[in-house]
Length: 102
Image: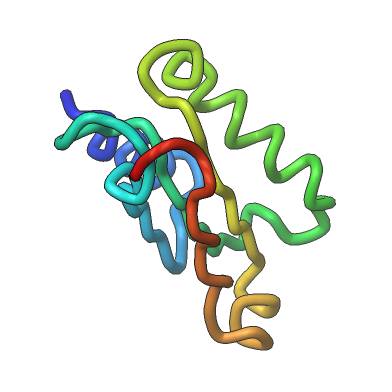
């Protein structure tokens, strides 16, 4: 199963998100074409109400730790409660990669 599909399915099953985006940003890095090594996750769920930001990240890392031990190299997490998401109306853009390349 592809990494993006696995990430999406696990996050969907565990957090029942109001909004979920799992974006493969590997193309922005110095990796072979078709890689699935760098992802941006935007996750909005009521499961994070009364949960500090560090604890939110820990919950996601616990869920996908086996993937991070393998081919998954980078995981940018943007995790919000529904109220936080409504207040900001969008996740920040990913920065340009400064590693390797032309």
